[in-house]
Image (cartoon, rainbow, N blue to C red; front, side, top):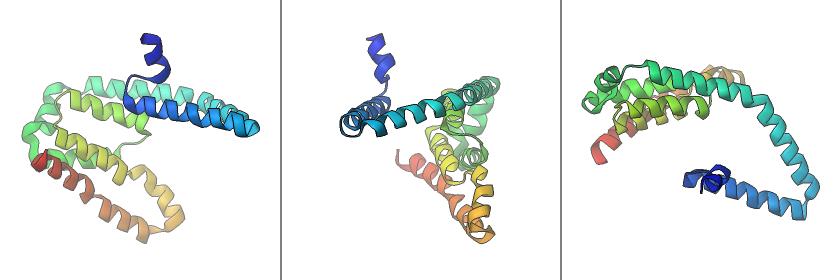
Length: 169
């Protein structure tokens, strides 16, 4: 079973993506083999160019998770933190840089150290909605008015999501 888990992943999310890619490329190799070959080659080139970045991001995120004391997480983001913890978590995650391969392990380590599920939800939503790292790109393409409106509308999203989890889950 270990080899199967290695090939198709341990979680259903991984398995769906891996099996979906396998089915898609099986179809492409039958119908359009040149497109399939090009896709595989381009994918491996992208993977090799990002490999060291991903490894570094994972190492950094794990170090951050290990360096944050568990008692601080419980105090600031734990079950009793309420609206203050939800707001802090959502806004903090909105400032985090990097892809999900870097940010999700940080959020997961905070959850493992006692961050309440409502705070974790606020963090996930804050990372996605606020995404301060995308502000520079937004300014280039859309200008300050649209970026400002995006941020104005995005900031309440993690807080509302966290409150919804706190109240209904």
